Amino acid sequence: MLAEAPIFPTYVVGSLPRDEWVLDVLRARDAGILNHADADRILDGAALSAIRMQEQAGLDYVSDGEVRRNTYLHVFIDAVDGYEPDVIPSGPFSTSSIPAIVSPIVQRRPICGNAPEYLAANAVSRTVAALPSPYTLGVTMWTAERSSAAYGSPVEAMRACARIINAEVKRLAASGVDVVQLDEPWLGDVVNPEYRRAQGIPDLDRELALYVEAVNSSFEGVEGVSTAVHVCGHSSTTSPGSRSWPYDILFEALGRMNADRFTVAMSGLNTDGFQALRHYPKGKVLGLGVLNTAEPVVDTPDEIVGRVERAMEHAPLEQIALNPDCGFAPYRRNRRSIDDVYLKLKAMCGAAETLRARYG
Ligand SMILES: [Zn+2]
Image (cartoon, rainbow, N blue to C red; front, side, top):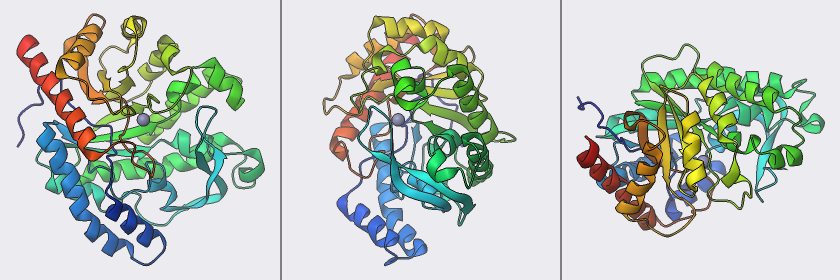
């Protein structure tokens, strides 16, 4: 039995860089050369290596590096019929594409396979497992042209996805993982007027209500596990508005979500950004993003401590957890080397140690 989590607990968001042989196994699995059971057995070694790397860095909560997934989205798309892969531009600030719904969705197999059981059984530290949000899977992957024959509206599509995600969240809770996290890659962007204009989203209040429904329906009736929502920071992209989000609007919406912790990207923000933490919902753990996942530079523990202390001017220390701004490899390609990531995580955990000595 693990002791109670310390103050300033440290988390990852999810994905870690994967070796080329791991990506080859995924390609062979997708091509049908390897069946899922064999691929899973081979990938156990990669998952164990990811778990031990994070524990060696000193993290209190570790993932399996999401080594078995093509991407954070495809973990769902690859297990559910009804999508055409990678046909919708993924937003005005990105050059990548996301799938579209083209027929009623039908689940073929458990979304996460045996990954959560393997993680819970093999980690010494506490564990976190993530799923994409029904908003992303339903609303952003619905287009009138491709999807309306299957679902009359994006909301209908979202609700169909939410039923599958809610069942998978309950399966994750029963698997023994400590935290289930929903990934909301565009929730941070939707409060940005420039993004809404480009995406043709006319009504912010209505859109935020959909986000809230997506999270609350995913976590409905879920017990025995801590819940989290990752609000993507896009520190990896050229998102021009990401530094000037109206955080008060974003935080008000988070306050209506039934989750225990939200990750908020803060590694690149100026003083004004930290002041916005005054609006962060009371009683929710603040997953403070203190590591930029796009840049190769490894911040020193002292620099990270400085970021947390700026946040502490506006939020109680008991509420603060430390995490990177985003996953380290949410897409197929690695953005950073595994050594860079290890050193970044180690610096973050070193910062947490300093903070505990100073304020514990
Ligand atoms: Zn992210």
